[in-house]
Image (cartoon, rainbow, N blue to C red; front, side, top):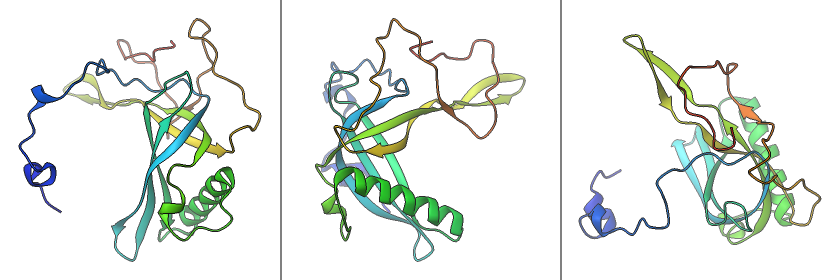
Length: 185
């Protein structure tokens, strides 16, 4: 693996040359709901060759809500833990079913397929350093499920209606004074 950004991009990266007018730099997690999306990228990656591997996915959201935003997913393919591997296979089966793929040999079969993705919010991870609580990791959008386009779903409510937030965290979320809030809170 190379650390040479210039070699990877073919030129020195100059931040001032990048048009960021389409973003405000504030990529808050999505409101938990079902969204239409297209698979833009799919790649098998090895974390430990021959031991741990997975399917890294990039989706682009379609439709009116969050259109153009990217969502990333990872599905375990090989893992020393049989439980992790079984969960990954079940998730891959659900993905394949959602896009009408009866058998999968290559990531190319996944590209440009549209489907519905169900999102949830993975809670921010807070840490205390020298008595000060800060975010170690920001809250993030995660994919919880897949289904075919046209399958009955509940659309996201307008922003004026507060949603019931579905969060994913290993420990119950604790209220932290001054902690960042989700856009719909």
